[in-house]
Length: 296
Image (tube, rainbow, N blue to C red; front, side, top):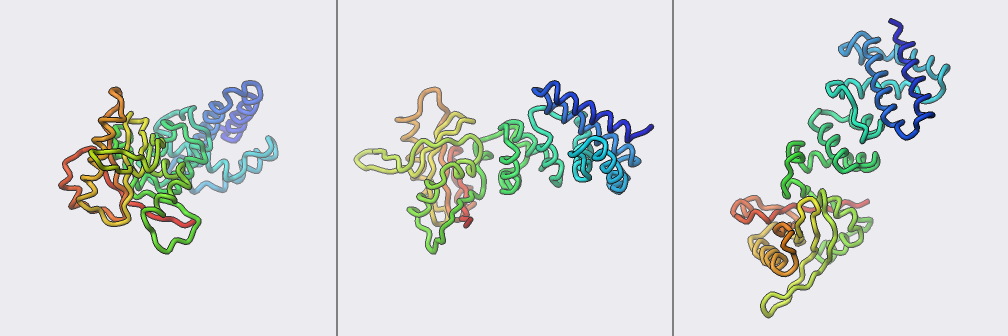
C-alpha cells in the first residue's frame, strides 16, 4: 500500500470539498485530518513505533508542500498523528469543535484532564481562545473531575481558589479594596467563580427588622436558576460569617426570588478557609472558597 498517495488523495479531496461546500468545511477538516493521522500511524508501523517515525513525517511534509502547497508542515502532520492517537477510541470527532480545539486537547497530559476540557468546550461552546485561557488558569485542577461536571452540584461549579487580577501594587488589602478590584473587572470575576454566574448588583441594601445591611454582591446562576449571595472577607473563615450569610440568604428567598427560582445559595470568599468550621455548618446552601491576588 502506498501510504503517501493515500494521504495525498485524502488531502486533495478535502481541499476541493472546502471550496465547493464551505458551510461544512469544519467537518471535512476533522474527518480528513483524522484519517491522515491514522494513515501516518500505519505507515510508521503502528502506534508503538509511530512516535519514532519523524523521519517519515518530514519526507511526507516536503513532498506534500511541494505538490499541494502550504499547510502540511512537519508540525501540522505531527498534530494529525497526535489527534488520531488521542481520540482513536472515539472513531470520530464531534463537529461542534474545530480542528484547532482537538489539537490543543490532544496535547494535554492525562485522559481525565483532556476529557474534562473536551466536555466543557462542547457544553459551553468555548472558542479556542477561551479554551486556552481555561487551561492556562488550571481550571481542571481547581474545579474537579469530569464526573462532577456531568452531574454538577452548585458547589462543584465554584472554583477554589478565586483568582482576582490587578495591575496595581497593593500593599494592604481591605474589604473595600477587594470589592473595588472585583468591580473593575467583573467579567473576569464571574468567569473565575465558575459556570453560569451573572451579575445582579453590589452593595445591595436590605432591611431586616430595624437595621439595614448590605450584601457585597448579589449574583444569579443560570445553571441552577438561583440567586447567589457573595460575601467578601479578608480574614480566615469565622463561625459568625455563616450566620451573616444565612441571614442574607433568608432575606433574598423571602423578598427577591420568585416562586419558580431555586433556593438561594451563599458563598463566602475569604483569605483562608477553615475546614473545621465548615464541618459543623449543616446548611447545604452555604459554601466557601478563598481568593488569591494576581498582579498582571
